[in-house]
Amino acid sequence: MRILAIGAHPDDIEIACSGTLAKCVQRGDTVIVCHVSSGDLGHVIIPPEELKVMRANEAKKAGSLAGIEVIWGGFNDLDIYDNNKEARDKMVDVIRYANPDLIITHDPDDYMPDHTAVSKLVFDASFTATLPNYKCSVHKYTTDDTPAKLVPIYYMDTLAGVNFNPTMFVDVSETIDLKIQMLSCHESQIVWMRDHDHIDFCDMVKTCSRYRGYQCGAEYAEGFKQCQVYLKGTTKRLLP
Image (cartoon, rainbow, N blue to C red; front, top):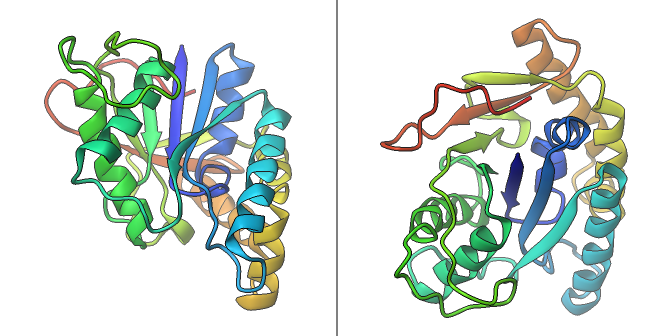
């Protein structure tokens, strides 16, 4: 299978579903991660242009640990809007390039505007990308308008699991150490969270995975909800 995971910022995917994605790679899937924005506003001291480069390198390093292809959505932080054609076409281009069998992205009820905007943008673009006669104005990753398949969307956990009740779980006990190694690649954020918010971020993420594990009888787990709308349902278990 081909899996496309779309997160707002570099490290969102590592936080919420990298254990699952690592298992997908291990079972033979092709996994592509799209960080929609550059993460350029994710620090108090490091200036945006410098941070943008730093976070791109951190994201590539994280993806390489699990054999995941890393691409970018073409936005900066807080420049993601879901109600305009240019933004939608950037995401259509990503989806048509990945041609996934399933998409993982943010929950529509997440805690910050980039996350909720990405969720809505992915929902809209995932339908638009399937239309054979839709001409995309962006061709960063594609060269033509070959349509993608209409596929299920799975919403990944919110930060600290706030207001998120999973309907399915993936046991990530065997990949939890890799998940934390991938998250640790985002050093700019780990240090900032420690110094600015007084949070041991890796410990927090591992603890949340441990809690999801308690909910489903595993040592560590990640939780998901399937987008329940017409034509996006499936009788198959697609997650590992």
